[in-house]
Amino acid sequence: MHDDLERVLFSEAEILAGIDRVAAEITAAYCGNEFTVVSVLKGSCVFCADLIRRIPIPLQLSFVAASSYGQGTEAGELTLNYLPSNNEIEGRSLLLIDDILDTGNTLYRLKGELLARGAVSVETCVFLDKPARRAVEFEADFRVLQVPDLFVVGYGLDFRGMYRNLPMVGVLKPAIYAATASPTPPITLDRGVRDSVEPSDPRP
Ligand code: XMP
Image 1 (tube, helix red, strand yellow):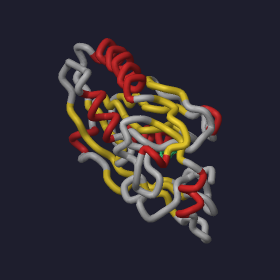
Image 2: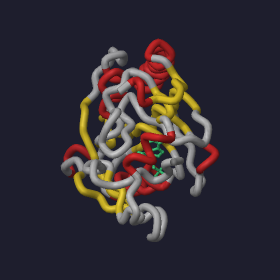
Image 3: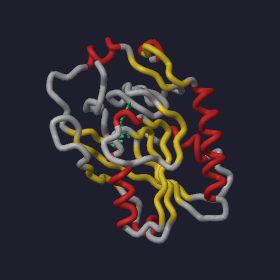
């Protein structure tokens, strides 16, 4: 699997050092306040597992799953596949965790949805930030690392459902995309079930 990488952008040691820093920021920000971490499936699960174990204050954990339309349909249209129950949202301070902030549509929409459902506050924390691709005005409250405008895999991020278990973040060799390229454009991007579809911005 490692052989499929053209280059490594962030080693495991760099990633964990960044997570230590952000975990300390979150601990300071939420100390004395009850809060719930809401992990966006599936991409943020690796990051979230490492992050919460470095936050030594009480928190609850919840999950959300959403699908967004990819190429060929209107950008930013988000379908919620799974949301926490009302009592996990209403009156709670939420910290929404995602793997990567790209166009910003996902977190922008999810934040609005959770606030509309009664959350007291919704802050956001991303493992990677790709500011070059932002389509809506949105910045995360906490972020670990910034990436250039490249399609990346590893540490939770996938290409066709694979590579999430790489401990580092890297860029795939062009041959990998060429070998799996589909002749038809993808219809949807499902963060919960993405294995059978293309990513939003692979650079074959
Ligand atoms: P938006 O554009 O709404 O979407 O901020 C964020 C979601 O898009 C996916 N994404 C990627 N997935 N490598 C990936 O494996 C990437 O470089 C990449 N860029 C965006 C991802 O599902 C993320 O949650």
